[in-house]
Length: 79
Image (cartoon, rainbow, N blue to C red; front, top):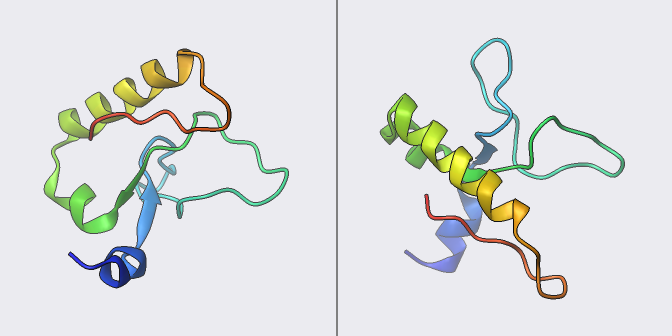
């Protein structure tokens, strides 16, 4: 997949599901607070995953965020 296609995909935050079942877009505006740290995935990937796979991915992201960071590098968690 080219970088252009990768950036043009619709990315959503699966860690903060809305009450209507949809997902908010990935990223946060300045000063916005969310319950959980964002776990961002392309919507096509989200639709192909089961409910248990999504919850496991969010759980791995939470565990990765508990570990200390080196500088400003992000913590990656396997999808």
